[in-house]
Length: 222
Image 1: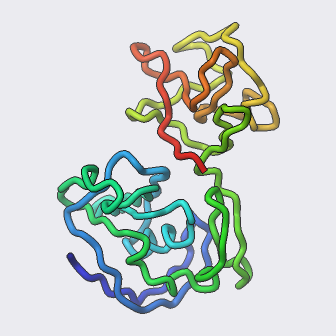
Image 2 (image 1 turned 120 degrees about the vertical axis):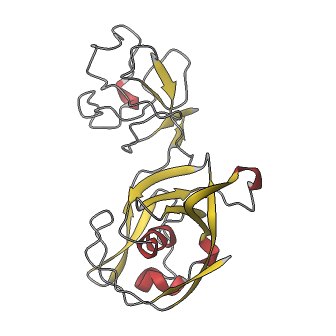
């Protein structure tokens, strides 16, 4: 267990459009540890401090992994306590549970409650819940998701829904009600969706790999 001392200003973080924070305190984290299979979002941040800030303002975040060389910030829906077999020894990664992050790091968002698919942001100095669409809801037993995840559970890049170049899918029973993008296939781009009325209820997409027609997407439920 390492202890990171926090005492920096968080200014100009484009990934979250956050205001500046002056924080202090200690955060414990596990070095050379990475929780796998429960990441719902992966951003690139300047420091581990910013990664911690993003986790603490997202109700969905139970822990995060941070790669000290690339700045990759993976936020997880589980922790190494709840899913210990998924906590792997990997060089250059650190892992921290959200309960280990000083709540004061969130500033005005410290005690502000948001929904699982929202993030608290200090807009104009006021704690404001912003919908970020990082989880799906169930509608009539089917996954409805308006987020921008565009890779499958095994890392394949999704094919655009209005593209039939790599994999043709004309006449597959597309249901526009499950393209929650102004009911537009074009606006759905290559995001994970559940658009067919053929019994497949989970999130998935066609892939850009000619040898892999489609695959499910690993997006958590709200």
